[in-house]
Image 1 (cartoon, rainbow, N blue to C red):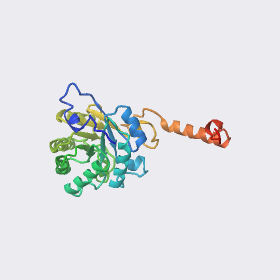
Image 2: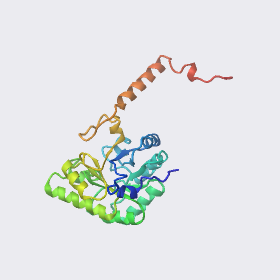
Image 3: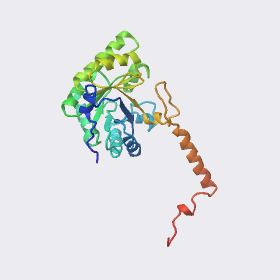
Image 4: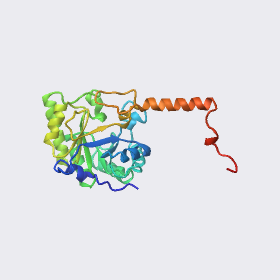
Length: 275
């Protein structure tokens, strides 16, 4: 059963005003029980069940085909491995854009059925009323502005946002609207470092960056990128802290060699009657 995390929405919302508790936040994605347990034991602050699973787990070219039912399923798997971290889940494409009422119902399912502590929505001023409605119902919301993957068609691809003065001003307005709507923190993705710094300094709630420079109040990475498992995708903002793709292939190659040469299994790995 999912325990009540000490790192709840109230904790994050008031983090900047607390000298005792303040430290930069660590957020990593997870999509299954095994990795969520390892992340939780590693002491990360937030585990995010990202709709990025559409790409790194399902093999799609984008996140748009991920369904609400799939997000509920993966959140259930992840929640079984979480004891201390805050568990947030992405609301998938078209699960919150139709109406605030539908968004609230779907957010409620991700919490009640999936076991999430909070939900994440992409967008700024356009979804502020939706965020307010979800928060008013008692469901914490993590905001997300800048490069919003669910809108990549409208953005013309996965491009850095906020390059012009007017674009940076629009991002700040989006961020402030989400803060006013009750978001407990805000993901800043794919924006210039100086824009992220300006937003971070203006907001009372924490910012969590991904491709947004070093001035945010925390950072998030996709687990497969962090571990060096995804060899087909290496954007500038990703740092791989291991090369597990190499280790996995080496282990499977060794297993294959031992099976084909009858070196595995040995007596040590076998059962016998009477033993």
